[in-house]
Image (cartoon, rainbow, N blue to C red; front, side, top):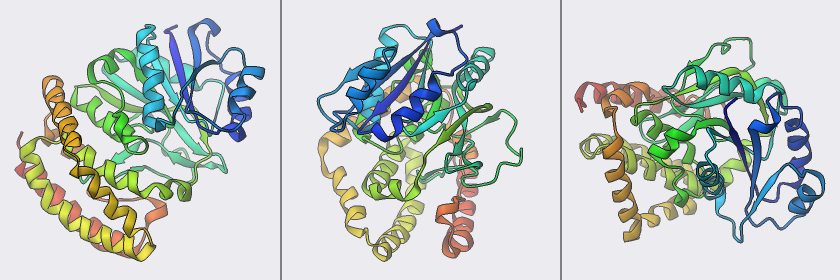
Length: 349
């Protein structure tokens, strides 16, 4: 079997580790062909001590500072690439796996070399009949959300399917593809880094898919995520600036400005206007634009898919259970869906 590095970023995750590591011990995959690489982001609880005392198989990479989800996973991925693993699997610390979770994603990837990423089927741990995500959607303005989040699983997603991008909570990545496109953008710190990576996988000519027979349970909490509005908003714009061609950006930006007005009003109503505004100031740093420029130049050398093809994959609607409200469903979604259709007609490059 191919050699897999299972990468887990730990940050004060003691409350999760017993469930996670116990479930990993039941993995149905040849013992010598996979390793657990846990990157600790300078935890202040007893999680490192707990791992050392109870799980000798786990290889610990100890960091002296918190580099975030993106930075921590990058350390693990770079270790895996340096040590010639065939695949890396990114797994959240707040998950539990089922016995065949790893075998099923590897078998699918091995059967089709055009696949760059395989996401497991993620369920909500709090209600194991409900889905967390069967693959994530990319809104053409940079938003990302889990498809079918909160839906009851009635077998409607039991087939392998292409997805816009995989959730970083549970995804297998082909090492040879990472060698081409690179790893996460470490400056993102947390949130949207998986969207950016999935977008690049498609642009480089590979595919992202979901394997329904690989099942992972996620202790996901929407409210916990929404505390990080600054990173969501900052990284959303950063991803758009990094991955669209320049001419496409000219046509996207009018819609982006319209959306921003709505976003500012929504932020003011919900008490996080300061965090929203502070995300703009990130782009006043010249070094940020230098990094964006370097990324765009690198991407232009490996790009095999046009922006028009990508726009056809994207959506103009946000259909996410936690954010459903009349203004979004009946005003914003229809307007931006029409705008996206116009874009796919105009953009030919």
